[in-house]
Structure formats: C-alpha cells, structure tokens
Amino acid sequence: MTRVLLIAAALLALLPAGIATGGAETLIAAMSSHQIQITSNYTGSQLTVFGLVERDGRSVSRGDPHDIVVTVRGPRRMLLVRKKERLGPIWVNGTQRRFPDNPVFLFVASNRPISEMMSEDTARRDRVGLVNAERTEQAWFNDSTTTLFRESLVRIMQGKGLYAYEERGVTFLSNALFSAPIDVPAIAPTGSYTVDVVLYAGGVPLARQQTNFEVIKTGTEQRLASGAYDWAWLYGLATILLALFLGWGSSVVFRRD
Figure 1 (cartoon, one colour):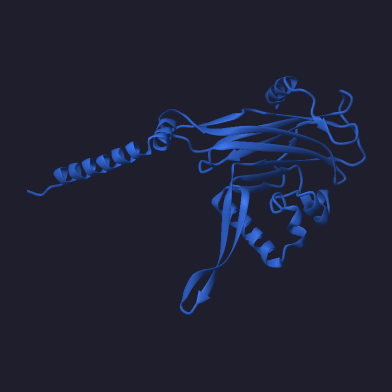
Figure 2 (cartoon, helix red, strand yellow):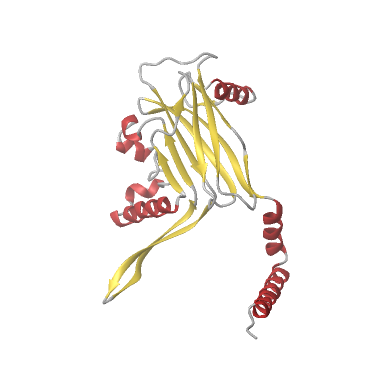
C-alpha cells in the first residue's frame, strides 16, 4: 500500500490543478501510463487512474460521502445492431438501428453502485453509467424500440469484452486519494482513449478531470500494418506469392511416392 501511495503522489505532483465545476473541491487525476504498445505477444494490458480530491490544498470533509465515476471511451466507429426475426423455418436479419460515432470500447467504474449515488432519472440526464454514457440529448424522445436496441448494443459489446462496468472499481486509498484499474483487452482497437473522472457528492457533480492514453502497434506489427496501408498492391501481391509458395511447399513435403 505504501508503494502505491508513493507512486500516486509522484504522478500527481507533476500535474496542474484539476478543473472545478462549482464548489470548493478540486479534482486531480493522472494515469500510470499514457501508452499501451501492442507487440507480437500482446494479451491485453492494465492501466491505473490515480486521483486526488483537494480543497484549498487540503483534503475535503463533507456531510455527504464523495463518489467517483470513471468513464473510459475508446475510438469511435459506426455500430450496427440487427434484430433476428423468424421467417418460416429460418431466422433472418430484420429491423436494425445504426449508432454513429459510438465508442468501440467503453468502461465505467465507480466506488459504489451508481444506483446508490443518484436516482435513475439523474443518471439518465447526466449520462452516468454504461447504458447512459452515450445517450444523446434526443434520447428522451426516442421510442422504446430505439432504447431496446441501445440496451442490446451494450449487452453485445459486453459479451465481446469491449464494454464493462465495475460498480466497485474505484478504491479510496485514503480520505482524498483514490485509484481505479482499467483492463484493456487484447481485442481493443488501436487509437486514442479518453478518461473522464467526475467527483460527486449527494448525486451532484462537484469537479471533473479528463486525461487520455493511446493504444498503438509497435515493431513488426506496426511495420506490417503501415505497409498494408501505404503499399496495398505490393502487400497483396506478396501475400499471394507467399500463399502459393506455402501451398507448393506443403505439396512437396506431404507428397506420396
């Protein structure tokens, strides 16, 4: 525990003061690392968010307990959800909904269940939680079908390991210092990730801080990816020649006399 506190203190000492959104609290946040490098033996990684709650340079004391919600969003893509419908003896793709500019990776962590921090209406309004994080302003006017598709999207992405919610994923190491581990699976896409850290008390946001990290390919993986993108025709030709060579080599090795 002492080692964790020392690491957190060293990281936080390098940062400027956080952004307060009303009230006297100041929130400071830092990442254990701002880059994840994908190599040939990459099986996923874990980063840690460290944070500190201060008021005029001192730890804060309130009647309502402090709550922290950490939301991590990955690269954004167009996501499509289709509903399977029965047509006679077979199942076919029926109604569908598109979710443009939606994060492929979404992770939410809090120090206790969000339902204990605030009401369900407040969570929807402030877009707190896994289902609400990407809820648009027009979501209040969406029909029940769109809501069902959004919930299905979250469930599908959870099954893939790309969406997750840890209701006790934030740990207060002291009255003011907290940490939250972020598990990034091997299938998480490359790109930039944003980390939003929000301080609450009594369901009211008091301060907010944003940081980020990126997932990149390095070594042979990066060279192959760059080559496939910059020299697509040459990469395709090399792939065809390699397949022909391996096919010929296999026929020679396993040829029956």
